[in-house]
Image (tube, rainbow, N blue to C red; front, side):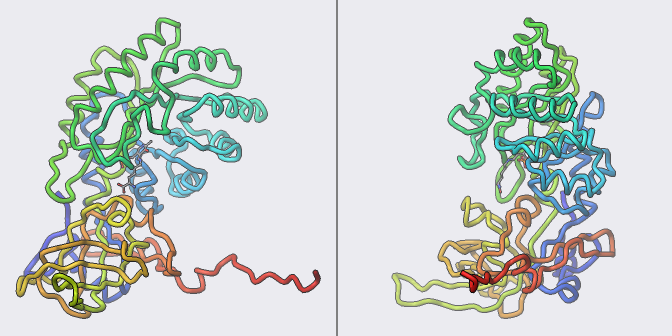
Length: 423
Ligand code: LLP
């Protein structure tokens, strides 16, 4: 359940009409409901209330510090994948002992930054990364806490671009080879072996791949125990899917129940890295219709609604052919026809929705692109020199801008016209 609902034919976010906010902040903008963010965080986290666990929100899904600080206040940690995300999490007040660092390509500087900050765990993804971390930690006179991300070779049955736990994907260390690496790590002076981590993909709508991966991880932990290596943390990654259209993902409660049923015989703290399931349906993108047009001359007439948000603002439709429900902010029903809802970017791939059965809309109407809270703003770019849009959070009958709209001046910040006249 989320707090975006029509009241008397106009879309509200909690207790404020979306059109009121648009009047003040202009369009396009991302709009998040605080009550929905809290509700979804708690829906996930409370499923594990009876066992030792840590919910580390996946910063990559929605990285605004206003949102990160909200989850920190609810006892959440952060799953980060870069030095930039670490900086954000710390600025938002996330306790470093609740931060875990994933990703295949951590640089030496990033490892150093993580160590200096005292984070809970580095999820190591290769042998070379282990050696680099050991070297950096030795140089700093510290011990680095690590888990290894094992790749269980499980098919998550999701979009190929966001499937991460198959042997052919770049992520993790093949589970069959990882024991040797643990043995090496256990002998390293500046490494403290703490955990096992496993993330198989995103937008999973079935629980069975999670369970299949977990069973492989359990067997793996037993093999480690046989070598005298004891695991304190099991990180099961993120990945629970959400409803964009007609998907039927498991409720987080069901996911928690099934995971816990598998873990009765294990003594370890569980770590989760959910992103989409918490923020996906807690945010929308609001955009304004600029033009409507009909192109004739092809086999059939083609109707377009041109809006002021493009693929640079919401990349998912262009990149993954992802579906986002789109609806007029003021409810309309008349003269439905099939339209493409497209942005202003100079690319045919710039669309927000294709072949939608849509009521007649006109210049100046507002449209809400639903389920845009996850991987929305965080994947936005300045392509076509478009300033990135504002982010706004609603709480009850109040709203706050949590990121200002960029300006044209900010577009060229740091750029310089070189002077080679002395050559
Ligand atoms: N942990 C790790 C190591 C991950 O790679 C990811 C997502 C997550 C956690 C969070 O997964 P979630 O709970 O959000 O499914 N841009 C794509 C999604 C990319 C997901 C990448 N990894 C999209 O828009 O669908």
